[in-house]
Length: 212
Image (cartoon, rainbow, N blue to C red; front, side, top):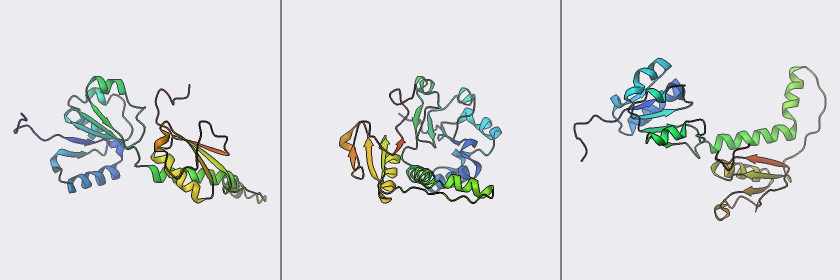
């Protein structure tokens, strides 16, 4: 039976979240009803170090060296990233610490970033920007995305958003996914290894997907 006298859990927003983002996230959590004295937004490494021993939950960007060794009460870690391969997963599992990530949250910005790179290479924008900085005005003929084929390896939230944006540019989209039954309709064709003009690799980092 729960101890009614036990203090509420303490949630620590690590300084690696970023001071501004941490303060904003804290306000959002308080608006959801969390007690103000139990949500701590650390702005500096010293503030994180001062509160980590009593933290039940930890929200972080990157993981500072040695931080988990001092987290005696920790029961939950939330990352701001989709990937978790940079964390000591075996140690967290052995200590019974729950781990959650931000899968799907970054689909829009990363999808747009991928399309930005595709446009940059196809239109040679990076070369033109360099020539402009060097005050060289050499004419270049860039290509077009329309009619090209993009192959997406790992059609999750990010891959799906890339597929949507690529389709809007008139590209044919081929996708690779373990469960073909859940392939989104925006993918034109599912292939094992598509011969494509461009490939976007976005699977989760596992023992199966890691490049050796």
